[in-house]
Length: 208
Ligand SMILES: [Cu+2]
Image 1 (cartoon, rainbow, N blue to C red):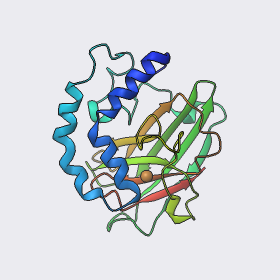
Image 2: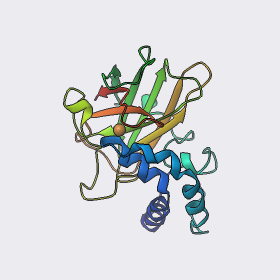
Image 3: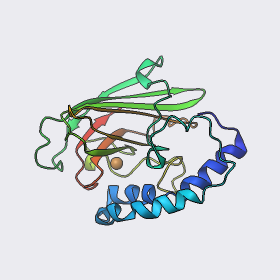
Image 4: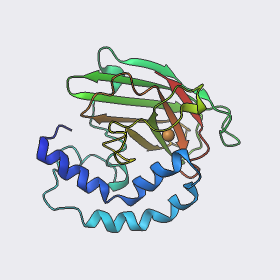
């Protein structure tokens, strides 16, 4: 989705209304995740307050408001973009029980249009929701450390961070692609995947 300057800020303002996204992000690096599941109804109310002139281009194909900034099925996957960096997920010791078979690959591509990230995973819990973020440290350093942010003093949500989200299929696989109009450069060191219901249980990490 390409946006001009004013559209970009309208989109950012709308995202600020997505309470659930912020709470999910907050749960990533600390111990506040227990509240995230309770916020879904609030997110729906906030979404109804979105300005009517929100750009609809690129949003129609997405699966609901929760997925608006987390998965863009219309985007070209990063692995189809020349120069993409590929990274393999490794299991983290913070993973929840029963996830020893989780594996996957992430790709990060940067072009003049910004950044595209794609992940594809196997061995997940069928029907479970997952969220993934670019992180600021390598996997060996505190399991990826804090989220990568474009503006270190900005909000813990897209577009200031790069988040992906998806629901695993009945076969335990899942994939997601997201774009951001800014280039992350070399500041995003890794990508971490978490179960949405247990954000502190960092499942796996991949170093770019
Ligand atoms: Cu994360």
